[in-house]
Amino acid sequence: MKQEEKPSAEKRPARKKRKKKNRKWILILAAVILLAAAAVLVLYFVKVKTFEVEGNRQLSDEQVSELFYPEEEDKRLYKVLYNQLSGFRKNEAFDAASVKLSGLQSAVITVKESVPAFVIATDASANYYNSYGVRIPAPEHLEVAYPKLAGIGFIRSDMLKKPVFSPEDAAVYEQCCSIFKMTGEVGLPADSLYVQGTQFTLSFRKVRVSLGGYENMLEKLHEITYQYDQYEGLSGVLHMEDFDPDDPYRSYWFSVDTE
Image (cartoon, rainbow, N blue to C red; front, top):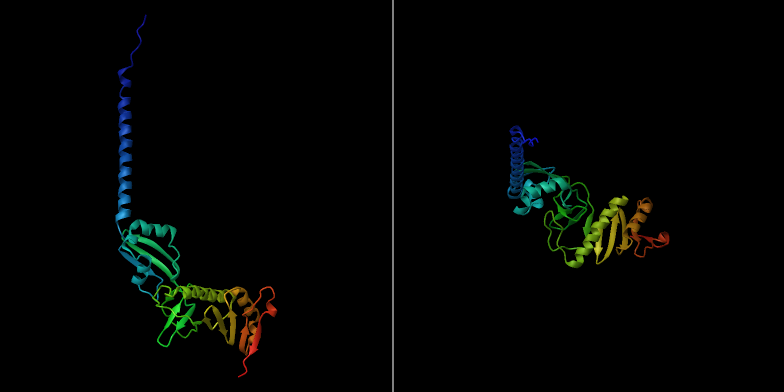
């Protein structure tokens, strides 16, 4: 009876090869983990120190970068990278804004500055505001006539921020901003908007439009646009206090100035 053959000695070294392969993958995995940990540490602890700004004509680089990154914590690399990938949250001081890293500690912010939508003028100064109601620098070409907002007083007005009002006036101010947006949407060239309490008066050419309250405002402005050419050369008051969108033609009337 033959004895069972024992495995030849030549086949045993295969185990050593497997051990070497396992050791190789362990080293690769450890290296990947170390690299990932190093990347996390860099993203968290390194801060962007230099912000270059493009597209700013009226504002300095410091003003723009301070607006988007006011705190030191905001300048951490991972936060700036997140802004680059997902975009900034809407900032009402600009029409558009984006950021792109140009190095581990430097980035470029690109902005599109807003144009004035209206101006609040006093005897001492004139402050310009965009369609969101944020104060922006005075335009380069002051010969352009911007609509004026009057009848509402603010506590203070800081650059690149909305004015500070009492709670009641703050709500009315937001309505004023909406009215200026609507006039742009319907193509109505307004000269001024006057506020008295919660009542609004819009002026264009020599016509004063008594709009009444904010209700049905877009319909009122559309109706004015339809009839705009009829008031060429006229001076007077268009009464729309009792405007009814279901019966527009009979719910407003025009009184000619007698003087």
